[in-house]
Length: 102
Picture (tube, rainbow, N blue to C red):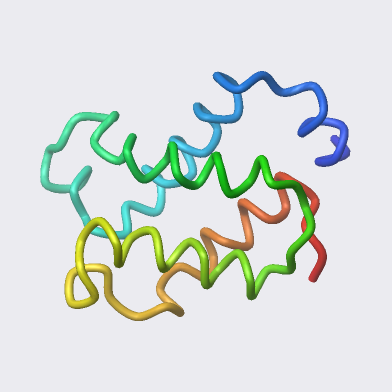
């Protein structure tokens, strides 16, 4: 199994961005990809999430979940972004990738 902390140390900014983009697109929280939007539709949000992740694994999953939800609320508004808990699995995947604390 790959150690996420080692991956974080050796991942270039472009690799990290691509990994985050793939995770966000797979979860498609606003359903944009499902509606036919291009694969880079979430790039503004992905860039903010990458910046958050580059702060390092100093936060737990709940903190990451809150920050992730805040990003989507900022870009899409609270009604479109939906409930915080909707982002839990995506936050867990991202936390696993960077080796965040539980």
